[in-house]
Amino acid sequence: MTRTLQLAYTTFRPRPAVAGQTVLSPSVTRMRVHVGDLDLYRHVNNGTYLQMMDVGRSNFLADLGAFDLLNARGWYPVVAASTVKYRRSLTLGQRFDLTTRLLGWDERVAYLEQSFTRGHEHVARGLVAGRFLGRDGSRVPAPDVVTLMTGADVTSPDLPDDVRAWARAVDVAAR
Image 1: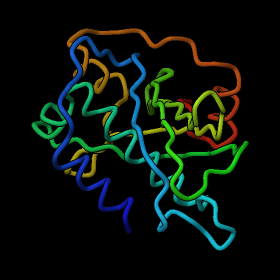
Image 2: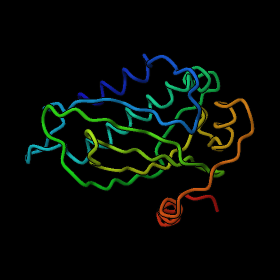
Image 3: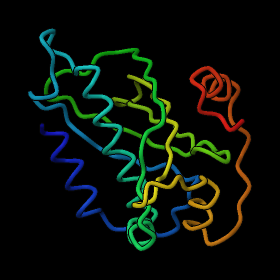
Image 4: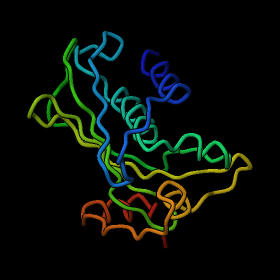
């Protein structure tokens, strides 16, 4: 419940936009492990990582100053697919960073990498295929969202091979 409240706060009272931030700039969210994040084994529950990633993506949009632009059009983000690879555990009270980066996009979705680190230690890596929908239920092409946020028609960088393969495997890649 704690992370759901944090997501509501970061979405409805977003942090200020970061001057010079671009859609390809990393966005860092600093967090600390709370007791409600833990499972019976006293480390962060795997489902909690996904909630933390929601918060990180909300902060990514806030850093771009994107909420007003998206709200004006009635567009909102949803997750089409996600996966997480865990390397180390996070335990009660530990501070960590969640870095969110847009890797690229195709006609359907935007691909983001979300990395959890504690100091110089890699903790986990998440991949997310995000989509935007209109309030009328329509699907918004990812290039339209990027154009809105950049004010220009921008070409996507090439996706890393592992991300491209994952997108095909989970059937979210543009056909």
